[in-house]
Amino acid sequence: MKINNSKKTNEVSIVYEDNGSINVNIFNNEILKGIAGSFDNNFRELEKISGSKIYFRGNFISIKGDKAANEKVKDAINYLVDRFKSDKKIDKNDIITSLNNEMNKDTQNESPIHFLDGVIKTPKRSVIPRSKKQKDYVKALKTNQIIMSLGPAGTGKTYLAVAVALTMLLEKKVERIILSRPAVEAGERLGFLPGDMKEKIDPYLRPLYDSLHDLYHYDKIKKKIENGEIEIAPLAFMRGRTLKNSFAILDEAQNATETQIKMFLTRIGENSKLVVNGDPSQIDLPNKNQSGLVRAQNILKDIKEISVINFDHKDVIRHPLVTKIVKAYQKNTNDKS
Image 1 (cartoon, rainbow, N blue to C red):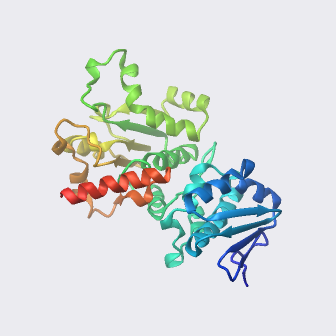
Image 2: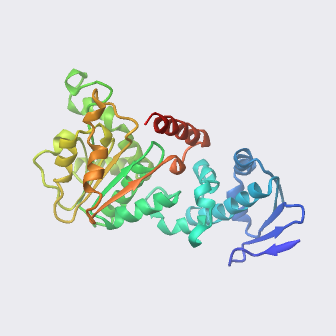
């Protein structure tokens, strides 16, 4: 058998057996308990996704099955160790991420562990980019003035943008966050919806609220909304404004026309960032040709101050079945074109 101390700490050692199985020894009991989860549920989830069997006794984890799958599980455990050390907890998304093919490819000297370099620390949780494109996206959010991201649901476009915006607000790098999206979807118009303006627009903006509440405390969000540090409004409310010292995010931009996207982008003022997110496969406008998202990407792609990130099914960080569904629809679209 061959011993491979793949980590430079004294926390993990790895032993490769002649029969293809891999033994992982984790010396720190707190880390071991954290990555195993209640009733070893995290290991059971790794088994379900990878197809390998995981046997756990004392401080030893034995991985048995297909050689390639075993290697991925070993890499996943390495990732989970670092994830637990960073955030002191593991959730189901971390399990899925740890086995993500794109992250487990140790190409160009970039292993899953290196994604911890892009961690975003918010008051309620640490957010870690879960694919190479997510890491590139976070870097762009921190360094560029205008960022456009296109891709399917579940790739973290909105969540990561809100996380970076929140940290910049709390670090006083900007004075306010503006979260916006088109208020016309699925053929419904605001005038035909019941209630006052807030009641009309809240259902459209709920995903933005959800991201905020996952990262920051409810009472503090409410206070910052009341004092104007966080503003959530329909895209139409952006007209005629100049956004200074702001981090503005336009979500669901596939449902904005070319004129509306141009209007939003030209609101940028001193010390501001603008983010435009959308999924070209989910256009709800009556005439899909009215969507200005892809055209804006093509027009603006050569401007160096504007970063464009294109996500695909490989970047979906949800249940593995979601990735397969997105991939199938992408293939169907490509076959028709």
